[in-house]
Length: 230
Image (cartoon, rainbow, N blue to C red; front, side, top):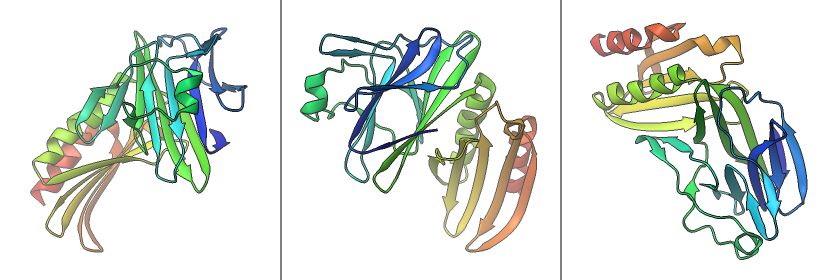
C-alpha cells in the first residue's frame, strides 16, 4: 500500500515493465510490487507539462478522492455495477488549478484495469490527512461474482457497495436493506492471498445475525439464495 500526505495527485502506470506510481506534486516515483503479466497498463512518463499514465488519482479535502483514466481504459465498480471511467488529459495546469470536476468519485471504490489474462485492482481511501492507495491482482471470476451478487441483492432491497481499500485483501462489501432486515456479502478481491477464494454471506436484522455462510466463492449464489429462503 502506498501512503501519501494530502493534498496529492498520483499517476499510476507501467515503467520498465513494472507498476509504478508518480507523486505529481512531490515529483517522486514509487514502485508498486504487483506483477503486470496479462494486464494492459499504459506507460507512465512525463512529457513536458503532461503526465502520461493509465489513471490518475487526486485527493484534497477530507472526503475528496477522484480519479480519471488518462491513456488507457479503466472501469469503476460501484452500486451500479461496472462502468467505464471518464478519460482525459492530466497536466501540471490541471494539478495546480485543481481542475477535477470531470473526474470520477472513487472514495472506497475499486478501479479495475483489465487485460487478456488478469485484472489490476486499485483502491483509494483516506485516514485523516493521508491518502492510501492499495493495488492487487484480481480476475474476471471475482469481478463477475460482485456484479452477479449485485443483481441478486437488488431483489432483496436497496443496495450499497463499499471497498475496505486499506485492507490487503481488498474486501468488497455488498449490503442490501429492506426495512430492518439486511443481507451482507463480502468478497475478497486480492487473488494473491489464499483467502480470496472464500466469501461471507450474512442475513440479519437490527443487531442480530440470523444466518451466516462462510465458504468458497463458487458457492456464493447458493448462499445468497439460501438466506433469501430463511
